[in-house]
Length: 238
Image (cartoon, rainbow, N blue to C red; front, side, top):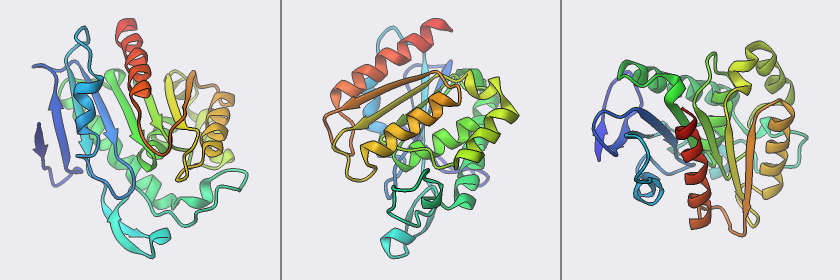
Protein backbone atom coordinates (compact mmCIF):
# COMPACT_ATOMS: atom_id res chain seq x y z
CA UNK A 1 0.00 0.00 0.00
CA UNK A 2 1.29 3.46 -0.83
CA UNK A 3 0.41 7.12 -0.47
CA UNK A 4 0.50 9.35 -3.54
CA UNK A 5 0.83 13.12 -3.46
CA UNK A 6 0.35 15.39 -6.45
CA UNK A 7 -0.30 19.12 -5.88
CA UNK A 8 -2.80 19.10 -8.76
CA UNK A 9 -4.78 16.12 -7.43
CA UNK A 10 -6.33 14.83 -4.22
CA UNK A 11 -3.92 12.81 -2.09
CA UNK A 12 -4.66 9.09 -2.29
CA UNK A 13 -3.94 5.75 -0.69
CA UNK A 14 -3.27 3.09 -3.32
CA UNK A 15 -2.79 -0.64 -3.50
CA UNK A 16 -2.30 -2.96 -6.49
CA UNK A 17 -3.30 -6.61 -6.51
CA UNK A 18 -0.66 -7.50 -9.13
CA UNK A 19 1.85 -5.69 -11.37
CA UNK A 20 0.62 -3.68 -14.36
CA UNK A 21 -3.01 -3.17 -13.31
CA UNK A 22 -5.57 -3.54 -16.07
CA UNK A 23 -8.47 -2.06 -14.09
CA UNK A 24 -8.90 0.61 -11.43
CA UNK A 25 -11.40 0.80 -8.58
CA UNK A 26 -11.65 4.41 -7.39
CA UNK A 27 -13.30 4.32 -3.94
CA UNK A 28 -14.63 7.39 -2.10
CA UNK A 29 -14.97 7.36 1.69
CA UNK A 30 -17.77 8.77 3.83
CA UNK A 31 -18.07 11.98 5.84
CA UNK A 32 -15.30 12.53 8.36
CA UNK A 33 -13.25 9.49 7.29
CA UNK A 34 -10.32 9.43 4.86
CA UNK A 35 -8.83 7.26 2.15
CA UNK A 36 -7.59 4.71 4.66
CA UNK A 37 -11.12 3.82 5.70
CA UNK A 38 -11.90 1.25 3.02
CA UNK A 39 -8.37 0.08 2.19
CA UNK A 40 -8.80 -2.98 4.48
CA UNK A 41 -11.68 -4.21 2.31
CA UNK A 42 -9.33 -5.15 -0.55
CA UNK A 43 -8.24 -8.61 0.70
CA UNK A 44 -11.83 -9.41 1.70
CA UNK A 45 -13.19 -8.46 -1.72
CA UNK A 46 -10.59 -9.52 -4.30
CA UNK A 47 -10.82 -12.96 -5.93
CA UNK A 48 -8.04 -15.06 -7.38
CA UNK A 49 -9.39 -15.14 -10.94
CA UNK A 50 -9.72 -11.35 -11.25
CA UNK A 51 -7.40 -9.31 -13.46
CA UNK A 52 -4.73 -7.08 -11.91
CA UNK A 53 -6.43 -4.16 -10.13
CA UNK A 54 -5.35 -0.81 -8.76
CA UNK A 55 -7.44 0.43 -5.84
CA UNK A 56 -7.33 4.21 -5.39
CA UNK A 57 -8.72 5.67 -2.15
CA UNK A 58 -8.61 9.49 -2.25
CA UNK A 59 -8.81 11.78 0.79
CA UNK A 60 -11.67 14.29 0.55
CA UNK A 61 -10.81 17.96 1.18
CA UNK A 62 -11.31 19.39 4.68
CA UNK A 63 -14.27 21.80 4.87
CA UNK A 64 -16.79 23.06 7.44
CA UNK A 65 -19.92 20.89 7.67
CA UNK A 66 -23.12 22.64 8.68
CA UNK A 67 -24.86 19.68 10.35
CA UNK A 68 -21.78 19.21 12.56
CA UNK A 69 -21.89 22.81 13.83
CA UNK A 70 -19.53 24.01 11.11
CA UNK A 71 -16.63 21.91 12.39
CA UNK A 72 -14.08 21.34 9.58
CA UNK A 73 -13.61 17.70 8.55
CA UNK A 74 -12.98 15.66 5.45
CA UNK A 75 -16.12 16.00 3.36
CA UNK A 76 -17.01 15.79 -0.31
CA UNK A 77 -19.55 18.60 0.15
CA UNK A 78 -21.29 20.51 2.92
CA UNK A 79 -24.41 18.85 4.32
CA UNK A 80 -26.82 21.63 5.16
CA UNK A 81 -29.69 19.66 6.66
CA UNK A 82 -30.60 16.33 8.21
CA UNK A 83 -33.86 16.38 6.24
CA UNK A 84 -34.63 13.42 3.98
CA UNK A 85 -38.33 14.22 3.75
CA UNK A 86 -38.26 16.36 0.59
CA UNK A 87 -39.32 15.04 -2.81
CA UNK A 88 -35.63 14.70 -3.63
CA UNK A 89 -32.51 15.20 -1.55
CA UNK A 90 -30.66 17.94 -3.43
CA UNK A 91 -31.35 20.52 -0.73
CA UNK A 92 -29.21 18.56 1.76
CA UNK A 93 -26.09 18.88 -0.38
CA UNK A 94 -24.05 21.96 -1.21
CA UNK A 95 -24.22 21.97 -5.01
CA UNK A 96 -20.92 23.84 -5.40
CA UNK A 97 -19.21 21.24 -3.22
CA UNK A 98 -20.73 18.38 -5.21
CA UNK A 99 -19.57 19.99 -8.46
CA UNK A 100 -16.06 20.54 -7.11
CA UNK A 101 -15.76 16.97 -5.88
CA UNK A 102 -17.03 15.56 -9.17
CA UNK A 103 -14.30 17.58 -10.93
CA UNK A 104 -11.67 16.22 -8.54
CA UNK A 105 -12.86 12.67 -9.19
CA UNK A 106 -12.73 13.32 -12.94
CA UNK A 107 -9.11 14.46 -12.55
CA UNK A 108 -8.26 11.16 -10.87
CA UNK A 109 -10.02 9.22 -13.64
CA UNK A 110 -7.99 11.18 -16.19
CA UNK A 111 -4.80 10.23 -14.35
CA UNK A 112 -5.76 6.57 -14.62
CA UNK A 113 -6.00 7.00 -18.39
CA UNK A 114 -2.49 8.44 -18.39
CA UNK A 115 -1.38 5.41 -16.39
CA UNK A 116 -2.84 3.06 -18.98
CA UNK A 117 -6.31 2.35 -17.56
CA UNK A 118 -9.04 3.92 -19.71
CA UNK A 119 -12.41 5.02 -18.32
CA UNK A 120 -13.97 1.85 -19.73
CA UNK A 121 -11.94 -0.09 -17.14
CA UNK A 122 -12.50 2.24 -14.18
CA UNK A 123 -15.11 1.41 -11.53
CA UNK A 124 -16.20 4.33 -9.35
CA UNK A 125 -17.29 3.33 -5.85
CA UNK A 126 -18.36 5.24 -2.78
CA UNK A 127 -19.85 4.81 0.67
CA UNK A 128 -22.36 7.26 2.16
CA UNK A 129 -21.28 10.79 1.13
CA UNK A 130 -18.68 9.24 -1.17
CA UNK A 131 -21.42 7.18 -2.79
CA UNK A 132 -23.43 10.33 -3.41
CA UNK A 133 -20.47 11.76 -5.33
CA UNK A 134 -20.06 8.50 -7.26
CA UNK A 135 -23.69 8.77 -8.40
CA UNK A 136 -23.41 12.48 -9.24
CA UNK A 137 -20.20 11.87 -11.21
CA UNK A 138 -21.74 8.93 -13.05
CA UNK A 139 -24.69 11.04 -14.23
CA UNK A 140 -22.31 13.71 -15.54
CA UNK A 141 -19.97 11.41 -17.47
CA UNK A 142 -19.32 12.24 -21.13
CA UNK A 143 -17.99 8.69 -21.66
CA UNK A 144 -19.15 5.68 -19.62
CA UNK A 145 -17.20 4.09 -16.82
CA UNK A 146 -17.03 0.33 -16.37
CA UNK A 147 -19.50 0.64 -13.52
CA UNK A 148 -20.70 2.53 -10.46
CA UNK A 149 -20.91 1.26 -6.89
CA UNK A 150 -23.00 3.22 -4.38
CA UNK A 151 -23.24 1.94 -0.80
CA UNK A 152 -25.52 3.31 1.94
CA UNK A 153 -26.14 6.51 0.04
CA UNK A 154 -28.54 8.64 -1.99
CA UNK A 155 -28.64 10.69 -5.20
CA UNK A 156 -27.73 14.32 -4.29
CA UNK A 157 -29.14 15.84 -7.50
CA UNK A 158 -32.60 17.26 -8.02
CA UNK A 159 -35.00 15.40 -10.29
CA UNK A 160 -34.65 18.07 -12.98
CA UNK A 161 -30.83 18.05 -12.83
CA UNK A 162 -30.70 14.27 -13.05
CA UNK A 163 -33.11 14.19 -15.97
CA UNK A 164 -31.15 16.94 -17.77
CA UNK A 165 -27.89 15.02 -17.32
CA UNK A 166 -29.36 11.90 -18.89
CA UNK A 167 -30.93 13.85 -21.76
CA UNK A 168 -27.62 15.59 -22.49
CA UNK A 169 -25.35 12.55 -22.24
CA UNK A 170 -27.71 9.70 -23.09
CA UNK A 171 -25.97 6.36 -23.45
CA UNK A 172 -22.82 7.65 -21.75
CA UNK A 173 -24.86 7.58 -18.53
CA UNK A 174 -27.20 4.64 -19.04
CA UNK A 175 -24.44 2.31 -20.30
CA UNK A 176 -22.91 2.31 -16.81
CA UNK A 177 -24.05 -0.67 -14.70
CA UNK A 178 -24.77 0.27 -11.11
CA UNK A 179 -24.52 -1.72 -7.87
CA UNK A 180 -26.42 -0.13 -4.98
CA UNK A 181 -26.76 -1.50 -1.47
CA UNK A 182 -28.34 -0.22 1.75
CA UNK A 183 -28.94 -1.26 5.33
CA UNK A 184 -32.56 -1.66 6.36
CA UNK A 185 -31.74 -0.17 9.78
CA UNK A 186 -29.56 2.71 8.60
CA UNK A 187 -30.10 5.73 10.87
CA UNK A 188 -27.59 7.99 9.07
CA UNK A 189 -28.91 7.73 5.51
CA UNK A 190 -32.35 6.19 6.01
CA UNK A 191 -33.21 3.10 3.98
CA UNK A 192 -36.12 4.97 2.38
CA UNK A 193 -33.69 7.55 0.94
CA UNK A 194 -31.58 4.86 -0.69
CA UNK A 195 -34.62 3.02 -2.01
CA UNK A 196 -36.11 6.20 -3.45
CA UNK A 197 -32.80 7.08 -5.11
CA UNK A 198 -32.43 3.67 -6.73
CA UNK A 199 -35.99 3.92 -8.06
CA UNK A 200 -35.22 7.33 -9.58
CA UNK A 201 -32.04 6.05 -11.19
CA UNK A 202 -33.80 3.00 -12.58
CA UNK A 203 -36.50 5.27 -14.03
CA UNK A 204 -33.75 7.33 -15.70
CA UNK A 205 -32.64 4.20 -17.57
CA UNK A 206 -29.66 2.92 -15.59
CA UNK A 207 -29.12 -0.83 -15.33
CA UNK A 208 -29.17 -1.28 -11.58
CA UNK A 209 -28.59 -4.11 -9.12
CA UNK A 210 -30.25 -3.22 -5.79
CA UNK A 211 -29.41 -5.04 -2.56
CA UNK A 212 -30.68 -4.57 0.99
CA UNK A 213 -29.32 -6.06 4.20
CA UNK A 214 -30.42 -6.25 7.87
CA UNK A 215 -27.70 -3.82 9.02
CA UNK A 216 -27.14 -0.21 10.02
CA UNK A 217 -24.84 2.35 8.28
CA UNK A 218 -22.06 -0.09 7.51
CA UNK A 219 -20.76 -2.82 5.23
CA UNK A 220 -21.38 -6.51 5.96
CA UNK A 221 -19.84 -9.78 4.78
CA UNK A 222 -22.87 -10.69 2.66
CA UNK A 223 -22.65 -7.34 0.91
CA UNK A 224 -18.95 -7.84 0.14
CA UNK A 225 -19.80 -11.25 -1.33
CA UNK A 226 -22.59 -9.82 -3.50
CA UNK A 227 -20.37 -6.98 -4.67
CA UNK A 228 -17.64 -9.49 -5.52
CA UNK A 229 -20.12 -11.48 -7.63
CA UNK A 230 -21.16 -8.31 -9.44
CA UNK A 231 -17.55 -7.30 -10.09
CA UNK A 232 -16.77 -10.78 -11.42
CA UNK A 233 -19.50 -10.27 -14.02
CA UNK A 234 -18.04 -6.92 -15.00
CA UNK A 235 -14.56 -8.39 -15.50
CA UNK A 236 -15.93 -11.44 -17.30
CA UNK A 237 -17.90 -9.39 -19.83
CA UNK A 238 -14.82 -7.33 -20.68
